[in-house]
Amino acid sequence: MKKYAIVSLGCSKNLVDSEVFANIIEQEKYTLTENLEEAEVIIINTCGFILDAKEESIETILEAAEHKKTGKCRKLIVTGCLVKRYFQNIKETIPEIDNLIELKDFDNFAKIFKTKPTSDRKLLTLPHFAYLRVSDGCNNHCSYCAIPSIRGELTSVPIEKLVKEARSLANKGVKELILTAQDTANYGVDIYGEPRLSQLLKELHKIENLDWIRILYLHPAHITSEIIDTIASSPKICKYFEIPIQHINNEIMQSMNRKVTKERVKEIITEIRTKMPEAIIRTTLITGYPGESEDKYIELRDFIQEMKFERLGVFSYSREEDTPAFGLTEQITAKIAETRKEEIMTLQQNISEDFLAGLIGKKIKVIIDRIGEEEEFPFEGRSYFDAPEIDGTVFIEKGDAEIGEIVIVKITDSWEYDLVGRIERG
Image (cartoon, rainbow, N blue to C red):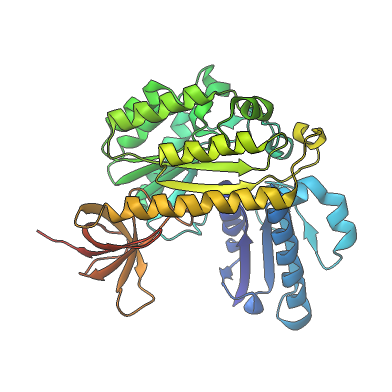
């Protein structure tokens, strides 16, 4: 039996590409293994977004290269965003790589295995949830971000094609559909001349077998009352808003080219929480961006304390070549950026702890992901405000369920980022 392994690094958008690669190789009777030592073919789909991601990609490639010496691996294939950015450099410095495949070059990948290219996917997620990439690329050109130079301008998928794909996924047993893109709120503007996320959501909501629809990457500059109202009025759409604000000081946001102000961000948060008191807002931040003085950092920290985002992640600024911010003069030291990041994460831990403690005794919907790893928790799942691989876990201490089932769970305990509860029936 021929076996292959695929390591997909970075974001969920990249994972969708990995699923296409996996489907192509399986046409040639290869079977997926998670054990790199067993694999005859190893595929690395890299991330090249920031320094940490680039370093992880290189380390993963080098680890896979070792398996060519010690394991069964006969072919090492590398693709993804890092290859797009540094093709020639990688080719020259890592000779163990057999094939470098340009980003999303499914045709040349298929030629390696003498098979036909396809856009179909083999799901690499748990079978009851899947990502639906509604667009690729980005028109925002944030000054710190290399994505437009890697993945190009915004390219949306037509509504009818997305609905067809979503329906197919639902027929395969997918209960939770997760919309992903570089900027989901701006979906469709390149095709239709105006954003059409609300229309897409209404069409997806009609698919019978889908139970949850989750939306990632809502850029605050493109969030409208129409989008908020559509989510509020659609029972299947999780009241979960991932809104990456990155910063809150107006001068910093202008330098970042975020096309939004502190005042507008506050308006969005107020509107969401007024219309949906149960809504959970997740955001991401960047500390140490050039020009982030102590006062501007304190403004950001105070805003986090005031808004009390239920979910929050922080990155320290990564100075990326080929971005406008690379040449800015007021660079902040990596040490200061990291210290600020850690301070905000400590603050957020307390906010998260308080929020989750407030759920004890309440009942929430939870999708069951897997059998528990510890005997005291027979199942593990996620609430409507927990995205896979990003947010927390709900540990089930009592009750029975099927994997992929959405159940009512009464919360009995809470930790910094996770919950404990028991399934309630009837």
